[in-house]
Length: 296
Image (tube, rainbow, N blue to C red):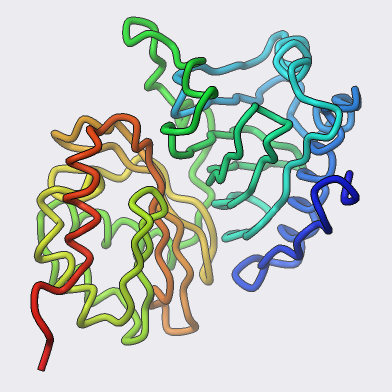
């Protein structure tokens, strides 16, 4: 795992994952970390050899069988010998999950903090879609031209395996945001919920403050008014959903959800491609996380 180069491997947060999911995704990222040293076989063995689909939602390209292992091998040939992929947080079960991770600079030439939608069947990955902030360089130079940008993220290649609790919450939240209904969205949150936007680098704490934030921002957020739920992942204590934006310049993104025993959201983390939005627009969105005046 090259811990001497990049420091100790962080202990992932699996508090909102099943034990089986924690074991599988530890193994998955340990294997991915060996790719730069020529050990791509162990990672590829974790993908279904016939049905697996890989997509990068930011760069706009994908790989799928037949020939996935060969394509992955070519892609991984650029990984540095000290590259490492660290698992940070797992939200879901052994069938589907939203997984947060960190790729070291040696892997792509820039640090990448990613959230992945991963569907699994029979202990092998069927679908892996990576989301991250495309303002990183030089990675964003690899982006496919718009005429060839793949917005079909292969969700039709898998059966929705999320359980009824996460499906109810994810679709309820997505529908409320799409309708511009901040109050209904806030009703799905714990009183002490945390709302994070990883792209905007913002964090709002508490249901009441989040509702006020959404009243200010819901018309402008790419996962707000006019958006739609694409695919739901996870189980009763954690997961999330992929979404399509409405009229925003940002086409798509992902939202991770942590739930408590009552099925309320305790932590939400959104991630999308900030390179799709002009810097002044990003700054205006980020400022909406600030209260305009003290709250009495």
